Image (tube, rainbow, N blue to C red; front, side, top):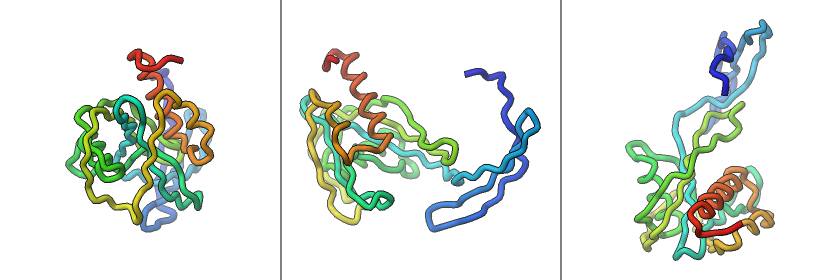
Amino acid sequence: MNNLIKKPKIIKVQSVAQSRLFTIEAVELTFPNGVRRIYERMKSFKRESVMIVAILDDTDILLIQEYAVALENYVLSFPKGLIESGEDTYEAANRELKEEVGFGSKKIQTLGQLTMAPSYFSSEMHILIAEELYREKLEGDEPEPLIIQKWPLDNLLSLLDEPNFRDARNVSALFMVREWLVKQGRLTY
């Protein structure tokens, strides 16, 4: 990316709406060419999150089914959650695994980071691989038990045919883990 591009100047930031979870801000900008605009964004709360691709016995990945209120339906997803105060990325990933799928991991690696809707929302999600799983369950914050589903590693891309596997973060993580497995020689195209 060209670091010589001059960014717009922020003239004013003002809260225009607030709920229990979100604050919406109006951001007035002047672009280098003199054009002024007002954009809206959700105020950043500076908390990052993790999404974990857990590999069980070198044969399957673990997914969860959970209710997504915005879609008014259940979705299929990799385990995920917020990084709590005082936790590092790996501790958060291991805690979320224990809460959501009942496994801990002896080996966790970072695959990369994703942002979601960066024009409207400042959020970083760390995508991690968890291997060498062992059974351990922690109490989570979900209102109902999550349904855990195994998916064969040698059939990863068939997840794209699942109607409830549509979250762009999950699809991105799927391709990230597939490339990682191919580079390690554990999977072929």
